[in-house]
Structures are given as structure tokens and as C-alpha cells.
Image (cartoon, rainbow, N blue to C red; front, top):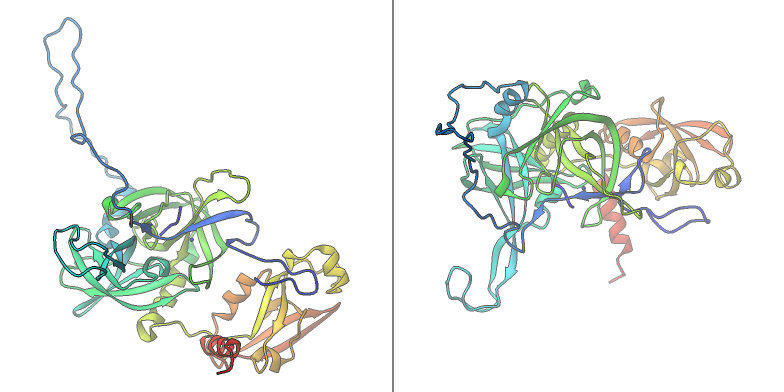
Length: 428
């Protein structure tokens, strides 16, 4: 979700390297994710006096053209939907350190050379979704606040307030901020993203190109549902979303803003778009992606409570079966012809739930709790619905034999990742 506010070496000769991209049938697209970066200052210099009215006269007549006094009621379902949530959509300003090499900054203030000061690094969007006493909570994208040393939120009336980072989740590209509730009059309501229909209206609200164009509204439709989207953020962390696809115009700065339905409910948080087709140079229009509201609600609850999302770990690295040639599927994995989708285990980490359950390298997972999984995004989605202490039934093929095991999910993913990173560090 231009950037909008959007796995390893071959092993035994058949694993492919992955970068940013779409999975589940949409390949070769370049994902543009992010907020609007503002290091270089104003993007456009506006000139002129704004809107102008052209006055015309009929030839041979002295009658001057006047503005009609007939009032047109242009209210529609769209305008009513926007009114319900527009006040709750804000701009999120990412402040970062920068070194000043001049004794006098742009405001004429003198100081020591090389002083570290906070300046606007980038801008995105956010949605106020909750008031709790003196505090109000804002959901935005993780990549909007990435690298921040300070945060500000610009409200709908143009005023700015300081914001505190409550928590982030790189995997779903979500973050929660806290601001003063003093001047907050309206909060957004989340709709049920599970009840969406392809083809129904979808309206995007946010700050394309930054706060200069705050509260911009674009309209489109829900183009697709449960679209698997994977990318890697600037920190090298995997971002994986089962996204809502929309053709409502989404531009840099829209990241973190609201995608709403015709009832004015937030059905998604805008996150990324495809800007062009990789390798072909073909420009792509109308392919934006939003994190579904039901997923958003689950994540922000945990961010409020813990500052992070606690997820169980399986303890494997994976690759989609669809990314392996049919010849290699038959010769190396020795799969029956009836198996045409699933997730291949590339490696099993020691002392993990997967190893304890007996899973091995080259096992091909096809079902979780009896439900078919066709790719790693679906597998992670099923895994991350679980809690620490839950169990999960995994059906897989080892060669041409189908087997089922029960995995006890006893390990926190973040702890497992930390242990693996420590093992990679040189001995001190």
C-alpha cells in the first residue's frame, strides 16, 4: 500500500529468492508502500488566486452573466458516509533527527554547528478510533512511523498535537498512537470486513502527498477480497496481509488512512499499492490494498495492552509449492500429481514446536485444522489466529504419503526470533 501510506539461498537447487511482491496469483508487481517523504520541502508551488470564474456575454447583448441563484442539493450516500468519519481521519507526521551544518537555521536562530534537531521526515495518515478519558487512540501504518524520533498528529481543523507511540506490528504493518482527547469530537467506527462484497463502493480518505492535501476523498469499489500481499519493509521485516483490493485512488501519504463503506464505517486501513509492473515498465493504476478492519481490531487491541502482538511460533522456514517447478515437485519432493498447492518446509529449527511434532524438511503442508492452505500467507494467517498454549493440527505430504500431526504451540515467535538472532552473533 511511489510509496504509500507497501527468501533465502537455493537449497538443493530449487528454492527461489523472493523480494517485494504479491502472492496468490498476482506476481511481478512493484509494491509501493509508505508515507509521503518530505525532506526536500514543498512538492508543488501554487500560483495564482485559486479558483477563477470566467464571465461570458452573448454577442450583441449588454446583459452580464451572473451566478444562478438556484441551489443544487448534491448530497449523496457518499457525501453522507464521508461526513460520518472525516473528522476522525488525521495526518501523521514523522519527525526525525537531522544535522544542521549552518550556524543559522532557516528560522534565523543561531546555535552550535551540527546540532541535532527534529524535522519532518515523512507524512502519512491515521484514524482516530477510540477516546478513553484524557487519551484518544490513532491507528496508522507501521511504515508511517518507522524511524521516528517524535510524532505529531494534525487534526481535521489543522491544529497539531504531539503523539506518543503505543506499539507497532511490522507483520501487519500497523501501529497505534496516543494523543490528547481534549479537542477530539468524533471517532471512527469499524465495519465488518468479513461481510464485504466485491463491487460494493469503497471510499478512501487520507493525506495524499502529505498534510497539504489532508482529508482528500477518493471513490472506487472493492475490487477483490483476501488478496495475499507480501513485502519487506525498510528494516528487512516481512509484511504479510490478506488485503482488500480497491481501485479508489491511493497515493503516497494515504498510508494509514481510512477505507470506508457506504455507511461511513472503516472497513480497512490503506497500506500499499502497485505502482508498476516489475521488469516491463508498465504503469499500473487502480490497484491499492487495505488491511481488513477485522484484522485491524485484533491487532490494535494487543498493541494497546502489550505494545506488541504476541504470536505463536511453528519453528520453520517455508516456500510456496507454486514457486517450485512441476519437475522438481515430482523428482525431489516426490509428490503425487494430485497435490498442486501447499507450503514446503525449507528448514525446521531445533527445539521448536514443529521439530517436537516430527515435521521435517521437504514436508509439504496442505491443511491446517482440516482447512486447505495453498500458500504461506494462508498458513501464517491460520497460525496467527492461535494463542500461546493452543494446539494446531497439520496435514502434510512426506513424499507420496499423507500424514497428520498435532503441534503444541508453546513458543512465542518474538522470543524464538531473538534466540535465533543471538545464535547468529559471533561468540564473545
